[in-house]
Length: 336
Image 1 (tube, rainbow, N blue to C red):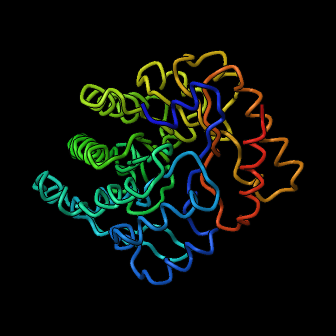
Image 2 (cartoon, rainbow, N blue to C red):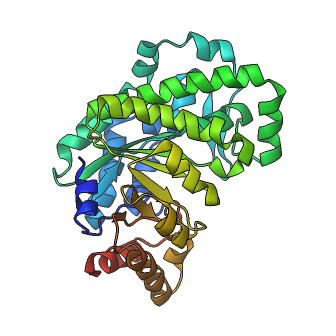
């Protein structure tokens, strides 16, 4: 079991932050300026390793998460992926035939530098720190592949319902390669995995099971069969009350919650075997210190009686002061 989960089980208030290696850090910006293409940045072994370790060196967090992106999967399947300033990801036209003919060896070769960065990070990382590998969940990758950018609900459903046969075939391919990507990260040294379903909140209730629950469940089942000691955290962002059904079906080791989730629902309805992670709205990192402390204590107190990993309900905002994160870490560390 990973050190992150060991600390959670022993009630040590472990913490790490989504997007902890990112734009708010001046040391990250220095590395980023030298990288013109974001995907190439993710595939630069030395640069990815360096920025992965930066927040650990600065804050002594309990886990490093490898610097990469969920969109390396469509990239490795042959779809063009670009990141435009102030726009976010822009993907090229999708061709099912290209996805279908992609071989496992070819896919792994395209992403070998992600795995090499994990190996290098693991060698440099303190043994008492966990190293998190990650991937987008099938639904979220499907959304990006079809929508070619961050989605609006109407656009996504129009495309999905237009060609049901193609969508089902595509979902199977995506699911297959997500598993391959996760397995390679584990082999390289990742001791914890997080699955980001960033657009789970777009789904209508009638589509939750097919697009979100079942594909994620199948991936986890395969991983746990081969790597039973590697914990898997799921982050079905924006899913609301359906998070209960999600956990009952998927059975993850950990559940990362967004800031809109009813904490009392989690306490009453989610199996205590599942470690809870996150919750605090990232906007409070840029509020007055006393308000931020109040929100930190809210989550620490609420989950005091069960396994909990402190994190945010989403990533660290780019306008956050590094000193604010220092304050957050200090508050969490001093809680008892």
